Image 1: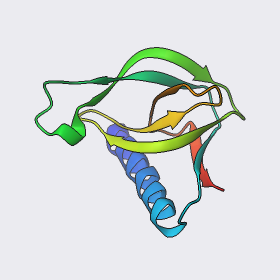
Image 2: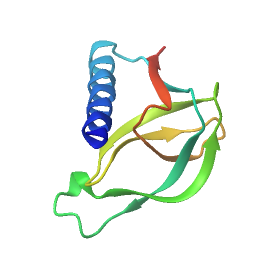
Image 3: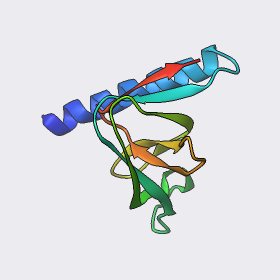
Image 4: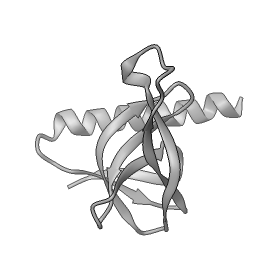
Length: 107
């Protein structure tokens, strides 16, 4: 049941992200961190049958704290997770696994 609930939250975030992306033209989508959130390097999973699902989280590259932000620059659907490709303030790019540790806003 928890996994189903987590999946529903992920889907809701992705639908919100897509709606904001399409409906707001050139606005930036920002993840506002509410709880400590890990940012992972992006790696390719060669074993994925669908190229759109070959993104996997790699090594931990940062942990964002409550109040910090990250610019969302992409959405990924993985075999075991969904996530956002983000660009941090220092220019570092990585992936944040979708969950309940942030909210998506636009500006």
